[in-house]
Image (cartoon, rainbow, N blue to C red):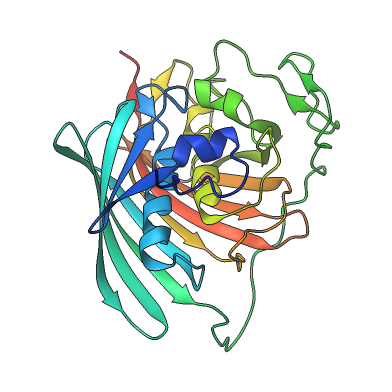
Length: 298
């Protein structure tokens, strides 16, 4: 039997949840697992990670190219269960290759995306990037988890999931460092943006690869939830991910990642969210932007 892509190493929970198997002619089979989302369904970053698995196998099976850009449109809600992926190379160039990937469940298309892969060691005419936010360092991997009532944003601790939190929160370890709490009803000043974020890592150590980066861009709660006083849903309409750091074929060493997420406008039932992911040494790992619904619950 052909091994599933994403399980070449000793598989972690994340590897098993995002693995795909080749079916031939650019087609791949996978499984969307339960518990990797929130209302109303699977998390957009988690779904994007599954797409990344198929794209990498089709365009860079030996790691000779790196994913640089992924733009996903979520056409209809995905559900836990089998998913079939179809990858088509649009253009294969000397520096960049472009591919389209589509996902289907029960015969209906649920996602479509365009991806750009670059050759490695591209020449650079200049280099600059945003600074790492000034926040407390990441907790140690073995640090305790504290409940929200006892959690201190300056302490060496991860926050413990509660039954009220979305299921996906239990799949990662998070240490909030920026912004407030969801549904606090905080009144915003005119023109004020709302921001949230903190340190993120998986419970089991694993290298940082493109699929994991895709998850990280959407795993945090939306900053737009802070000014609300009643529960709401924020399903993603589209998500664009730009991978800025160089990722070796085997991935970067396991380490926490700092996510900073910002929303400037919530109008006409939608909101945008801009994200930045940083390594502890200040390296810009990725940037993201998404448009999502912002709708009352029920």
